[in-house]
Image (tube, rainbow, N blue to C red):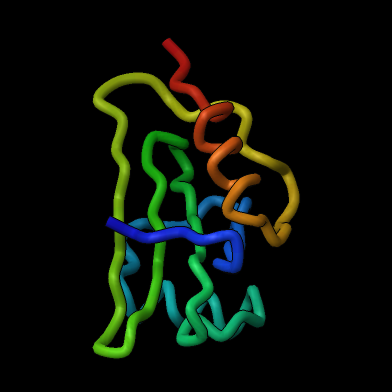
Length: 102
């Protein structure tokens, strides 16, 4: 489980990402496109083009973790249009607001 506190920085990558990219590809995307240091405890949240999966990339002292949520059916809706920093409270609310379409 990925632990969130009020101090946990969260970056939401709103542009769809090719999920064939694994850890190295997502880290490169963070560094080159988002200009984010993925090794500083920031949680980076990605969505795929079909809007059926989200991934969270995080780093602990030993290495990277990827958490994936894949919908059995439907798509995520309500995904924001621009990249922004989120507080854990905002992220929690976002996860409740983003619902699967039928």
